[in-house]
Image 1 (cartoon, rainbow, N blue to C red):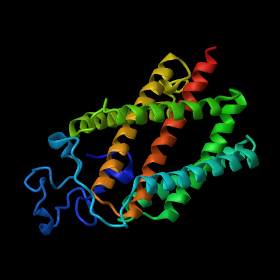
Image 2 (image 1 turned 90 degrees about the vertical axis):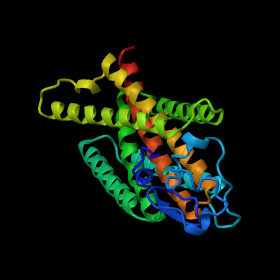
Image 3 (image 1 turned 135 degrees about the horizontal axis):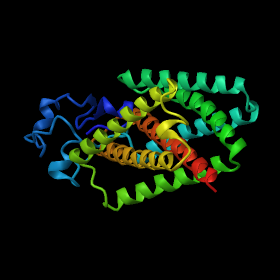
Image 4 (image 1 turned 30 degrees about the vertical axis):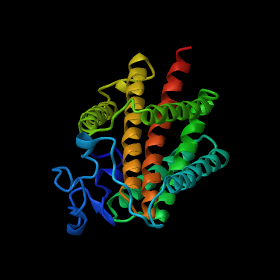
Length: 286
């Protein structure tokens, strides 16, 4: 099962004593006593959810394995770095053409750092926190721009992001959503179609074919697209929750908690940006 995040899309937590890619077979010695050893999905620790969902194996007894506390702490550090970067950018970069240019530059740097991390075999806290800092600068200027026109929109977007993420977690933990391989395939197919449509829409806007942002306009159609994007963000969160849960169960190394924090941060940034646009659209129609 693959997540929306590039850091999760290429690899997963392994069942054995280390960390392996999705296509890496378990160690031969581990097959003994492993109820999943004869499972055709055994090479992918997430795909087995369709076969024996709800019965993850126990993590090996060791002190150097990822725990939920590790994920929470690293996520708090990463999101805190985003928040600090955003606050500093908001305070030090007043709305202007120069600040817009700096925001775009920061977004590009954050994107590059995210891609470098996603192609590394091991998590790098420096890259992850660097991504968070530059992403924060972008979000600070972006949020200030919206706040200058729609006062209070960033605060409402933060509350909306917290509400969506909290509700998604509650629904996931209650078992109302079963994250299976089929669920992931269907959701990711919809997400890819959405991204392709958004890319085409951007090209049409750039070349002047579509007016007022096209599908991303500040009208009813733009609101509908924003709601779809937020629902997709919630879908991404369920995949992230499942992979974190499985990573802990499979005994992933403690260092991988940085990877989990990175993925969660990327998803929450997605939801916040879409929520901010949605708040602005509804405020424009008042």
